[in-house]
Length: 334
Ligand code: UDP
Ligand code: MG
Image (cartoon, rainbow, N blue to C red; front, side):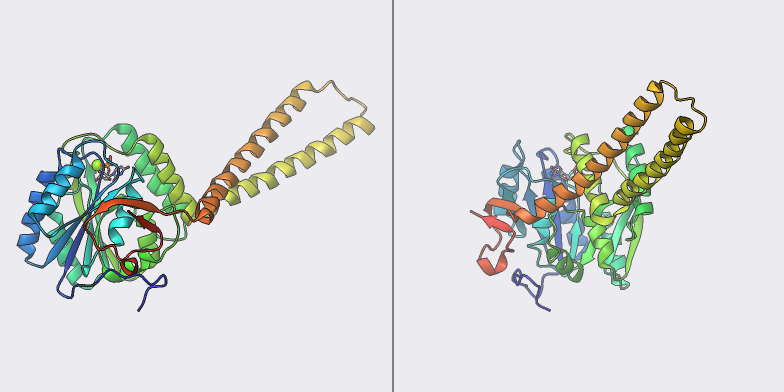
C-alpha cells in the first residue's frame, strides 16, 4: 500500500529492527545507552539501525551522537533546529525508520534496553504492537506518580479508544503501525493513543521502571499538562459535553429561581433586598461560563494549530536520506 502523502523512506529489504531514541540533554546517558542497546541487538542477531533525534539539546548531546554516527554506520541521526518536544521528536524518528519492527525507547535508561528482547519475542507470536507496562516506578516524585496514575485512569474513562494505563511510549511495533502513524496528520501528537486507535493485535509485557540514570527530566510540569490536554482533546469530546451539560443544569436551576422570584413578587409580595442571591448567581454563572469558554478554547487552539499548516519540525542537520520523495511534507530540511 502506498501511503497517502506518498513519501516512503527507502526500504532496505534486509533491515529488521529500527530503534528510535528522542534526545533532550542526555549527554551523560548517550554512550551508556548506545552500549546497552548494541548489546541487545547483538543478542537478537538481526540487522538493525538506531535513529537518534536530537530535540534541541543545550548540552553536548549532538556532538556525542555525531561521534557515534562516525564510528558506527548503523547510527543515523536527525538534529532539530530547536526543541519541538518529545512526541514530535519520536514522530520524526518514525518518519525515517526502515526496519520491519520499530522500537521507541527513552534515552535516560528508565526503559531498560534489555526488555526489547522480550518485546521482540512476544511480537513474533503474531502481535503488531507490544508495549511495556510499568509495574513499579522507582525514584519519581510522589506528585508525578499520583498525577500520572489519575491522568491515565480519567483518560481511560472518557475516551472511546482503549488507551492502556501505566504505559509510556516504550514499545515495539510493526512497520504497518508506523505507516498508520505517518499518515495521521494531526500536529498535537499523543502517540500512545494514536497507536491504540490503529487497532490490530496489541499486547503488553510488564516491567519495573527504573530511575533516570543521569541528568534531569526534560518533562516540566508545564510540558506534562500540555501533553495531558493533547491526549484528552485528541481522543475525547467529554469536556465539551460537560460544558454543555453544566449549561443545562444551570439553566434548570435558573428557571426554578425565576419561578420563585415571580412568586414572591406577585403572590407572596415578600420581595427582599436579595443581594446575596444576586451575587451568588452572578459569580456561579460567571464561573461556569469561563470554564466552558476555556474548554472550547483548548479545542479551538488545536484546530488552529492544525490549520496553520506549518512544518511539524525543522531539521537543521542529519545523515538520513533527505531527497524530497523520502521526506514527509510536514518536515522541512536544511
Ligand atoms: N525528550 C525530548 N524532548 C523534550 C523532553 C524530553 O526528546 O522536550 C526526551 C528525553 O531525552 C528522553 C525522553 O524524551 O529520552 C523522555 O523524557 P524524560 O525522561 O525527561 O521524561 P520523564 O521520564 O521524566 O517523563
Ligand atoms: Mg525519563
